Image (cartoon, rainbow, N blue to C red; front, side):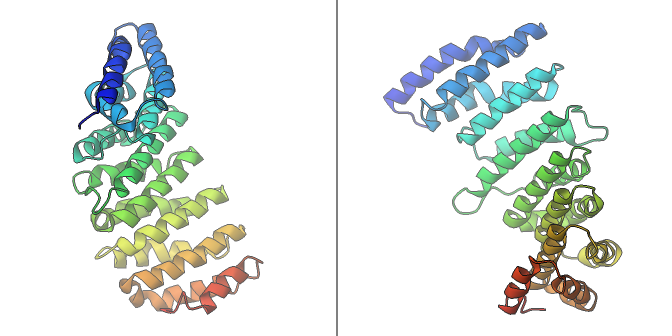
Length: 312
């Protein structure tokens, strides 16, 4: 990347300012590491709005990305891991993380290392949420790349494995963030997700019975996006898992959950040709939802009358 003379001067100044604190991230003394990451966080929070994104991007590539990833993955001090992740989020939000296959692999490797097995290597709920927020923010930027976004083919197995674990995290906010990641991947990388659909769908189905209605809504939204990505696996998933699960959701006590069920079923029938073979089973569930007496069901019926669910 090419920097202007002014940007080059700002880059050199920042390099000198932060180098000592970056070195502190690998110090044997935990107090030194904690002080170093705190100083980095303060400095970059201040400088992020004062220098160009190009300067931040150059700084991230040359000095920050790998030390922060290593700190977030390996540091035994909880506050160091947390601050490293908050720094990575700041950099990501300013477009400083390169939208490249290399950076994608490094980010996914971090997420998989901390969240990819049970029990979670990352014991702190808030840090697990930060990891998912970083993943979502980076994937969202990848999805926004002009033209064809970077393929997830090289990392989809690790992503599906991790999201299948975090979807059943006891922390409700982690469940919801996992669903957001699934929705983003399904909408942007449908082909890449296809072979991992079973891994993704099963934990989302389990969340349909969660005590928080918002978690149940998010699970239905994730299923709405993911199920049309399925191919050969759809027949087994529909018969053994999806139909038994969604038939119970019709009786959910929450109107917002029942409303989302109707939207989800309508999307399946409109977007997936393979659903046609299950219309005899899906359509009665859909009709039961449309016939719901809840006030907000008028909106759903209105859209159905308007032709949105024409394929039904």
